[in-house]
Length: 110
Image (cartoon, rainbow, N blue to C red; front, side, top):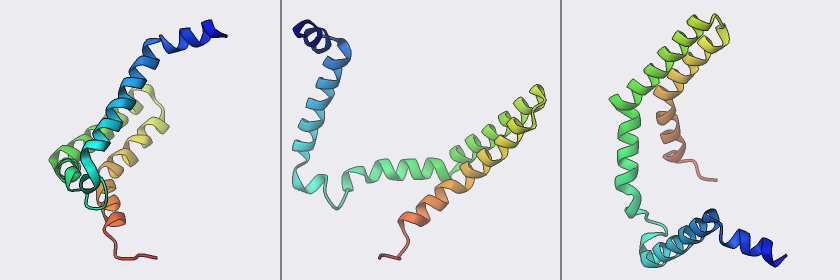
């Protein structure tokens, strides 16, 4: 039993998980009560970047590229299912960020 515990505790995955847990606790403690609570001003630059990337030319380009790749693979393999998978992928990539934004910015609060 002790050998099994020693083997688990000394495994690299356990050590990395422990280090990540310590880092997370230290980071959460350094934010204090103003940074991680209600305002979320710390994450606003990240949110702005991700929203601009997904709704701008980058997101639309990735969506259309995924759709074209799906259609191409479907045409080469002769399977219609793969080709039809590329179309919803492209539509979700284009309209998905706008739908998600409307969920989070709606005024309906129950």
